[in-house]
Image (cartoon, rainbow, N blue to C red):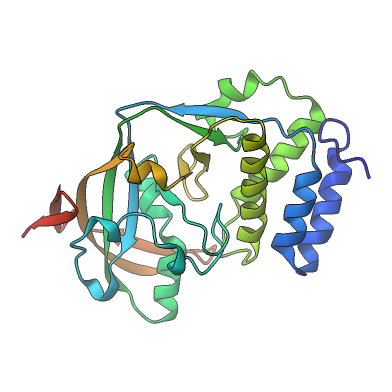
Amino acid sequence: MDFSVDTNSSNIIKHLESIYSSNNMTYERLFNEFDLLEPLRFIQVPFTKGGNIFRCRLNKNNRSFTNVSKISYPSACKVKDYSRANRPNQQLFYASDSEDACLAEMIPIWNKQIYYRTRNYITTMSMWKITKRIKLILIPDFQNTSYTEIIRRLNMNENQRTFWKYITNKFKTDILKDELIYKFTAAFANVLRDKIEKKNIKVDGILYSSVKLKNKVNVAIDPHLIDTKSIIPIGVKEFNVRITGLNSKGMPTYNVSEARKRGVIQGSQIKWDY
């Protein structure tokens, strides 16, 4: 088979879909197929020093977090499932470019709460400041106006555009609608990172459009940026969240209160203003 994205994208997509729909060793098989694709052009997007990103956590038993490690990336042993860009036991720091996008990304977790008949709970949002310029790989979304000009500069041909639209649609597919989608996106994200690293190009993670909010983005960042204080927590607050029902698409609807309390970061501890 011709694995050139430049000339054979339609057949490549059909081939990938046949593997994906088989639900047989999906991650491993897709990883191997993605690895054959050439060329996988990529766009580096700088996140400048001084910018902020946001991360949410659901409070277990509605208890407040007191240690920064609990609002940061998880330990490897706790990463038991696939997520948008990681396989099990692979650590990444996920965040969003806005508070609204950050809260909206909680919907799959809130959906589980409905299943367990829990409708009132507390969510903690932390704000993180970028202290050094970092570089992320963009999953190009042709509908996200934030990156229209950057994508335009690539001068993609029709085959390339067809392929990347296919990939972006997968990254924008909701886990509530397709329970296998993370195996697809995690396989692609890891292959893309591997191919870039083989070219001795340093990148710090990936950037992709929010599933929930138009023109907003999420990031999946290497944990070492947290460890080296290239990204640091600068504030935290708690919200009361009430699930009000389901909309016509079967997604949870919710109300979020004003911050019920705010906290400051003191070393490795969170000090709450009660």
